[in-house]
Amino acid sequence: MGNCVRCLGLDMSTHRIDPLKNDYANNELIKRLLGLSWNYRGDCLRVIGLQLLLLTMGLAGLGFAGLGVDVIHHEVAPFTEKPRWPLGLSPPSHWSAISVVAMISGLILALALTRALLNYHYQMSVARLVQAKIVPNLRAQVYEKLQKLDFRFFDANASGSIINRVTSDVQAVRIFVDGVLVQSLIMLISLVVFLVFMMSIHFWLTLACLATTPLLWVASVMFSRRVRPAFVRNRELIDEMVRALAESVQGIYAVKGFGREREEKAKFNTASNLVRDHMRSIFKLVSLFGPSVNMLTHVNITVLLGYGGYLVYRNELALGTGIVVFSGLLQQFSNQVSNISGLANSMQRSLTGARRVFEILDTPISIESSANASSIRKSKGEVAFKNVFFGYSKNEYVLRDVSFSVESGQIVAVVGATGAGKSALLSLIPRFYDPDRGQVLIDGIDARELKLEDLRRNIGIVFQESFMFSNTIASNISFGNPWASREQVERAARLASAHEFIVQMPEGYDSVLGEAGSNLSGGQRQRLAIARALLLEPSILILDDPTAAIDASTEDEILKAMDGAMKGRTTFVVAHRMSTLRRSDYVVVLDKGRVVQTGTHDKLLGSPGLYRNLANLQVVDDTRSRDMILNSSQY
View 1 (tube, rainbow, N blue to C red):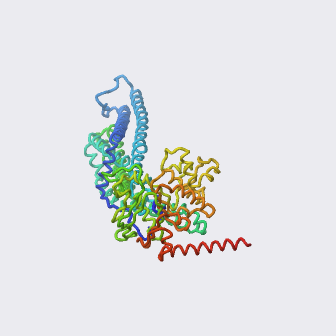
View 2 (tube, rainbow, N blue to C red; view 1 turned 45 degrees about the horizontal axis):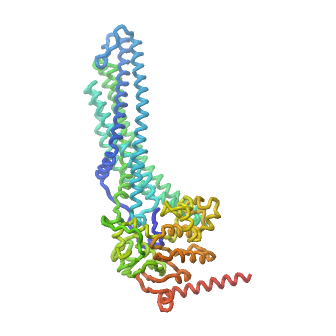
View 3 (cartoon, one colour; view 1 turned 135 degrees about the horizontal axis):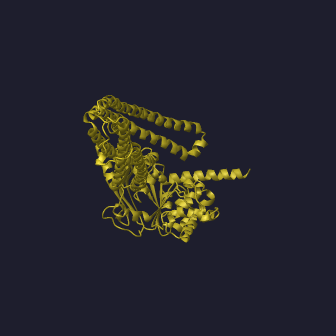
């Protein structure tokens, strides 16, 4: 995905752009995550409501269990206080203890079954909220923003990092909703309920058992401060690992061709081991924090057994509805407190993911239609550069004071050595970039004052490296115009001399291409790309060395087809072969970002200068190639 501009042959090696790096404060991130959660407030309230019902039923079950113990205890020891029934309700006096215990057991079983059913609805509600709403919607927002960002963003960020932000980082953001916000509210409500319930049983016993709680808060704060930078570094290491994997897969022919499998394996293993080792350090922090919290909660149980047992012995606290219920409440309270370690861990994961997702969402869109942009249905094809300066980074221009005009229907050849600025020049016409100074005019109007979608629909582009999608051949050709008929698709294919090889494929135009067109030759991919551009019937056609990937036997056929395709439309061709240059009406010669020569092919060939030098070099190369072919035919 990244570095798409290299399709136009742009050399970014000396024009690096700093990748995304925004320092968001945690408070700012939390506010934005709360705003995101507010969009799903109805679903969040439903989840919390179900959890409150589960909490209520759990407390009711615990209370009935304690009541059952008191019933049995009173039956065994009649001198003890009679069980206290909730809400003043009690069974008939003629019921035996066994009947009462059986009734209580039945109520507990009914509550358990109801609780299981509610828990199922709770889990489904959480899954719907997270996986059916938050994740797809947020992922769609990030992807939509990526489609609007200019090429500078993709030049600066590796494809592996971008993919991670759209996938795993979006998943990390949703953790804030179901794993932090909802769970925090549930934990807070549960702790308050448990605390009130325990205090209603015995106030001083509650204070004694919860004396260690402030230590948990201190431990949580210290843990969060330690683990935050660790999670940030972890995401960076995962990006590096994914990048190493992507490069190895994309460059598999080079890897195998140069016998570098062992080195690439070692490279990936190194990146993978760095992720593993760093995760191990995070696990150590989490593993230390979790048991520390559990140890403090078990201290509370020790206090309960000592002090609570003393109160039962003094007959100041009931056995069932007293210490048994209090023990269950304290255990539930301790479990909720123990979740602080998980919440802190989830909080840091979600903040790290949110920081990376918001970096994309907050990236300014530098290439877009202005508020008062003009519509253009069908361009005349007039193009003019006026004093254009352009660079990928500030004060490092790759184009300097470029000025020339092209009339409608002219074929313009752009010539120059590698790095002269040819592809950079062409990238300004469809507004892949905007010039730093000067203007690019389309039909006399600054391209920045035209609606971007209208502008690009009037321009057909054949990149230097033609990318094909994993779809049918017909779908690839009609990519820019999905509503094109099969007749239009076939006509474009014939113009690009692609029809013959297409019909020879097993399913013809319905043949499905492999990833990036892997089951086609370079020349076939190039011809499909030409057909894709021609199908739009654009007013302006940009061809980045269209015959570069085509063998000599098909070059004449392609050029003849292109002669007909270029008629009636303005065409810019980055070319090196004389066969292409001769077909141009106008030649622009670039050297180190400046226009050094303009004119017709014949005129420039007859004048001393860079163009004639380049032409002479090609004549020498063509002569040597012809001699080699003639000599080889004698054997």
